[in-house]
Length: 238
Ligand code: C5P
Image 1 (cartoon, protein in one colour):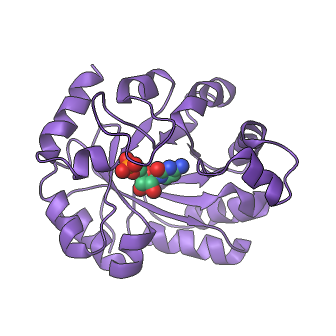
Image 2: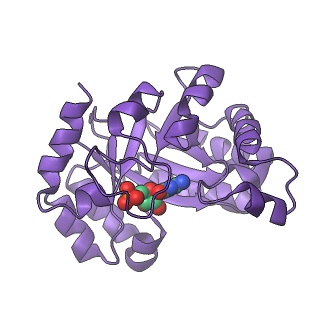
Image 3: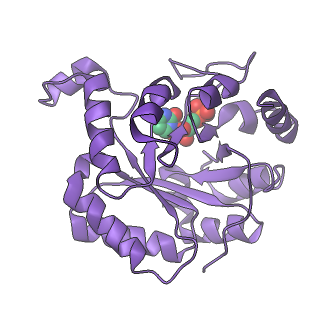
């Protein structure tokens, strides 16, 4: 199913990290598509498949399909093409799939007769990885160096931007310019619990650092009044 992308101007993407369609749609019903977009990740998509994307889009939400595709170029490009035809607003791949994989994904998108095309993003180094983790898998460089190196590759491989830590955002924005989109998780409104996130940043700090889109999950989805928290976050940005 193809849905036109909405004209939502909010930078907030609410992470719908739920185990089934009913809970995800139940949360969407308590939000407003004029005030946020939504993210569907591996757990929900593996359980619910394209039906949950259709359901969210038919409620007016732009959907970020966060499956972090990483495979040979042909396979990854085909998956990106399918995501585009489902009408998602944003889709992502792993930069570690390399230039040929990312370029094949861009070509697959350009072949779709869709307007607008989904934003095609890449993950560089997962923020859960430490320098020690990178050494263990054979990388000589540390996380900061790798993030910067891979972001340059991403920018030169036709991607629209990267998913990154809000703490990396200002450096990446300066290096790659305003049109290169930055999506940042690990956001915590003032007074929210950090949950299992380590290096947290407030919504305002993230925007000031150059983030274009802020992924926020539990501070909104676990709140008694999710819409009130969402509204308070938007107010905090003005
Ligand atoms: O609940 P919380 O705000 O921590 O949710 C953050 C969302 O962003 C989750 O869906 C998580 O998987 C995702 N994410 C993240 N850190 C990354 C990449 C994605 O927290 N580096």
